[in-house]
Amino acid sequence: MAKFTLDHVFCFSEPTLVSEIKNTNNAGFTLNSEVHHPGQGTANRSIIFEENYLEFIYVNSIDDANQNPLKLARRADWSKSGASPFGICLRSAIPENELNQFWTYSPPYWPEGSIFINKLNEESPEQPLFFVIPSSVRPVDRPKINHSLITHETKSTAILKVEVMGPHYEWPQKMSACEQVILTKADFPHMRVTIDGQLPREIFLNDLVSIVSAEQLK
Image (cartoon, rainbow, N blue to C red; front, top):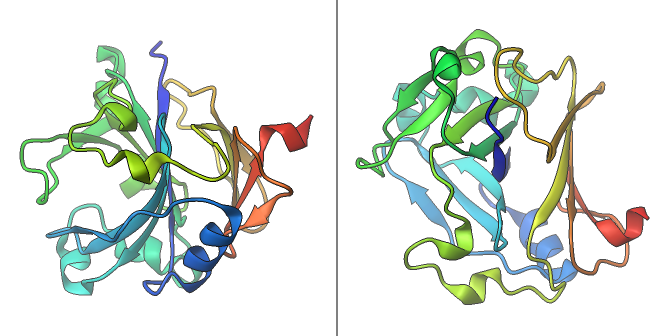
């Protein structure tokens, strides 16, 4: 079985990111500038740590999103479509006996790259989007990383654990798990992100995502 490492998690948000910008700044996190995904119909802003990151993603071209094979428009419209607003991205090579659980996505904005999408995205969109980058490179070690973006007042360097909650959420049965990710059944979608560093309390970054430090949970 592969030992997957958490690369990042995402939550679909409103394009204005009013709550996310206000609450991340107040909590002492650095939020990067907007990044566009041409041909996919989305854009994002993220809290980037040395080891992984938390992404707020949103649709900025509904036409592109509807034509793209990821079908992310339905996740953006999660409250009406019933799809999950969350995504879980892992790092590692995929074992050969698990490759048939994925299809290969070549992002229009990253033509030289490949991302492996778990087939649950098409079969059960009410589950989070599970996908894998076949790499071991951390965000801090990626080319052209702006190190000021991974410096936070909270002194945080990593997401240690993320609990992803929602109706009937389950880990894909034939896919290796990741120790940093816990899926829990709940009536309403919520993502609780546990980080290292210093936070005075659990902070809600938007209606779906809260963040807490490991020190608070001791």
